Image (cartoon, rainbow, N blue to C red; front, side, top):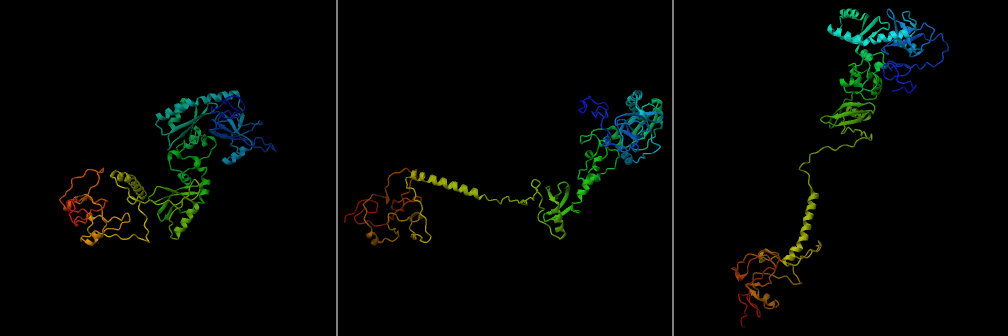
Length: 507
């Protein structure tokens, strides 16, 4: 992957494709935004230069006593402990004064070390040889520490450019007696040994890496001072207290939890206090979380699992009503899609056994009536009878005349309405000769046991009838037919008698 700014190819350094100006990565990189501004007074410019070592792992300030101007990315040879060291210029100009003030370093301190010269080829050659020894020296030193059973962890080693001194960075929970280990290091590596204890966060900054956000660690790129972080910052931001998600590469809480804490604290001032519990007619509602960016407070009713988002205004109103001893009927939550209040949800009611399917019963009854009306003419035609006349609508103002219900009605059948404008007959038990004399004469007909002979019809076969009754009249099941006549009458004049024979007696 080449550099797009100058086209010189892959940049040098730690092979992380950093900027061409430094030849390395962006570890502890600083942009000098005052570099192109003209100076009004050259004598008043800052004479201190910031130099980084081990690819930004360590930065120190050195005084520039030479007349040469150094820019960012230049290699310089500086004073070391018992020799010299080679570093890279990371910042120069007026921004160095801001860094001095930030770290509390005096610009005119006499103890500040000096820059000797720009690095020459011999200095750079010695520097690369010393840096090549660091990996093997670190591995061997860890073996020695494990052999001595010391409760410590060697994180990094930095050898001076001239190869006379080595600084070992380690982490430990308790005090460690490493006097024997220092003697072994000096005898084997032929170096002046310096042990420096660092914290876990400083160790992660020196090692570097990629955070859960997908970017380089803040402590290895720009963060220099580490502040304490506790779980209170996570609670203010409504984050779940999950150690695996809140911990960084160092195993401690992430430093970025403090970055937005002030913004959250300012936003939380708008939320009402002491609103953890709300009283309603359905029960108490408990606060489960706050959505600071949407200004919503989520509640859950006692004995329910549904979450109700309420606005800040609604929560304050409910608190005011509870202060007056009034319990609202509903929380009136907010619809998250439209931002309006949700309609009141109907309560659940168990109506098992109370549901009446009247509509289905009516439809089934209507179907049965239609089937009966469709099958009725066919049944009547098969019997040889006339279809029934449609029933006329009755007028409630003019009811039909009452019918006479005689006790001598055979079979208990009701009297049929008169047909062909004939007056209704009276069927009495008394033999009134005057009524018989006034009847119109009929043609003689054959009388088979007092029963009229009818033509055969397509009727189903019936069991034999019993003719032992008076006049040979068989008892039939009630049908919609004319009731049988009374056979206990004397024979009429000029007609056949109702007796057993059909001959007419001589006058």
